Length: 219
Image 1 (cartoon, rainbow, N blue to C red):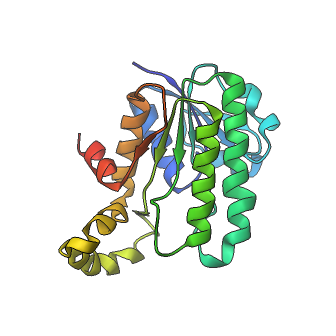
Image 2: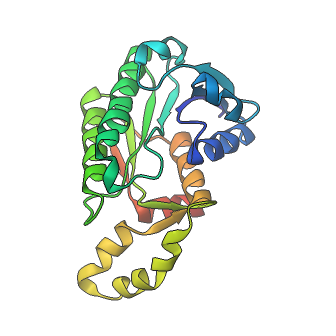
């Protein structure tokens, strides 16, 4: 059944692909964007002008009982951006859950990151803190944990595929290699659509790891 989906981060790398996919499936998409980025929202979505770091700027536009998908994050995260992860990634999910609770949304989807991980500690810590915010909100929620999403302009990890293949053959590292595996933009988009359309029940937040992302994308 078509539903209303509010997306924060709809103008980004993953957000544009997800918005387009949802529109093709007949869903009504409301896309949060700053004025300068409004033109990047795919045609067919309703643009909501606001600041993802200030709940009051967009909370009135969140439809009651909708699905709220939070995709905001620091572009091209790296070790030098630790302060930005706190200022943007963590603050934005705090504001998103505040707006979602006020609207009484039916389902909150948070794009997190695979964890624990041996690298990118500040980034993983910010996302783990974001997950804690979502859990504490009491919302019916799904936490989606990719590691790296391959796509246009995001292909350098392909060089690591031989290392991943080797790690999957070693019993002591197989689980980590699977959890920190690579997924494509198409797989992530399909998995998110599946999560949105079949949210699951209330209770503790549902966690979607890389193996399940791949499985959902294949259905």
